[in-house]
Length: 256
Image (cartoon, rainbow, N blue to C red; front, side):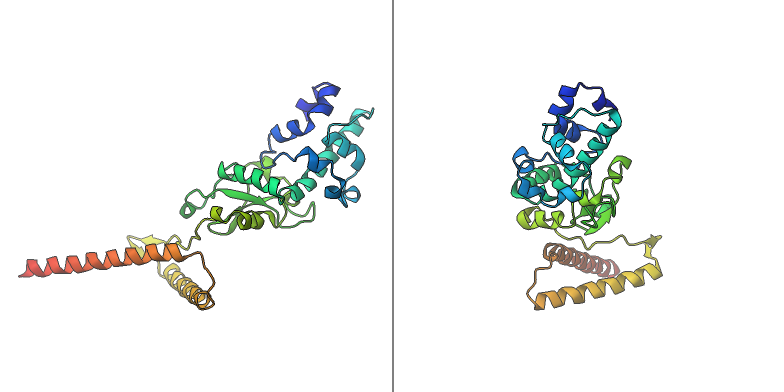
């Protein structure tokens, strides 16, 4: 805000969206096309949710021409940011919006999954509610299907409603090739190479439940997303069996 106020009034009203997108903490947002912002149909219902709606819209669309004091301008600026966020949630599920967010996803602009076994899978921002001021934005990993908090405190305070609860699912439906294979591998705690009993028991129970679930899905002819990983696991098991057979054969030869 300080950097913005240091500009002239002309700069203030001519480059608002450029300033907003380039500001620190707004890296999760993409730039909304002017044609989308000026189509009143796309803004339906927002006039009741945003204070000083018309002034805020004028500011976002670079036609702001209202002589006011600093306090009023700051209030309008706050409303403009809120308005942009609400429109952003609608824009990113359009064809153009999805394409822009896809490019940011490919560049890992939203961060990478902190879970080691997800192998730095890029994350996507999402909201846990479509109602503003309910919960902050979270980051979704499509590999482990879990949610994470943003690392930066600047990102952690962004309203989750500015991304909505559906965007991340719609993106993978439109671009199915970007959906990573599901991860079923888990860390197994060990002591001197031996599995910890309680954790091992829980792991066996979870594995059995997962296998029963996958079998039910196979019978229903539903793709599980685990096929490739299952094939890799089968190959590893065969390799382990071959190694055991080889070791047994060598041991027998030594005894002879």
